[in-house]
Length: 478
Image (tube, rainbow, N blue to C red; front, top):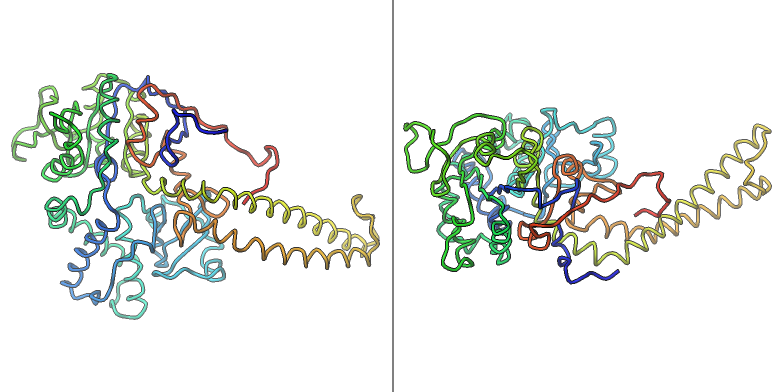
């Protein structure tokens, strides 16, 4: 069925896990970085990497020859602090791909390492790479693992290496040099979206209360928002879109703490804000409970939109019972690639169905051979003599080998959709990825960018798709 004029372009839909009626949403909160303000990942993460690299050089580490490669790793992967690996797991926690350092493990190496291991994100062994900010961190960690294996980093173990990278990365962010570079030349780093202000205006004109809750400082938030929005808002600035602006919110503790609000124009030693929150002021810190009381709304009437699976979506939904939307910018290109691959995916599904039929016949004939050895009746489906069964099994093996030759390039191509090394963001082999499971559990909806709300509109009604089960009508699978 062809798309109607009212449907979004390819890759710009809002995808629904739990039914969401936008008419019932009275307030919408937004994160800023990689949510309202989207960065050129290669440019931003390259500079983050460079700042961390310089700090490690200053500590005497031999990292001068390393280079940032944005294609090595992807969001949704998991660091194994015990083995120094970066892995992809399916929704059940079984590892489907793994790299040691920056090199992918072979099937046998991976099986040896993880045949008896289940990825449990509640264990301290594992670190989930939640956002696009993780790409430079993962790249550097993988490279340091290789230096460590060559004996160039002293006695640091794999856990210590990750702690070193993380602390150095945090310092680069917090001490301001990196953000000062972004502020000085936002055109190098920020990807403009002319649809975004219109989407927020539609929501505001429909009576929704909009608020910004970002972990970034005001001195960074203001120029980034001004650069991304003000050129599209005739006679008004970005502040006119929001009923409340909160910086340095310290998510995820923002959602379960009771930290007071402070006015950004006041110094830290001044008392916290005790009067009603005002749209003409900008605040730092604070807590979600006070925001909810300020708007006078139950949690189910508030939607929060962010890019971090845990700090934005998980905690706000679990603790506050707010509705949640996750932004996955990579999904846009991935959906387009999958649409373009649709014909080949159909071929892959048909061949896999043929393989399944062939394997079922082989299994039944092997059972017939086994029963014949014990003088037992053959399966009712088998009418061949025992010599004919052996001949048929030889033919089936040849057919299977030929079928595998046809399947191999299709399977390889399907596994390179989205990311050339780790495949589709939300798939792990033929199953859902661990990231997909996290999104399924904690995000009511997900989409590639905030401006996709233009097509949903403030009056849209999203219904969750009927979930598929293994016993549903049999279909081929790729």
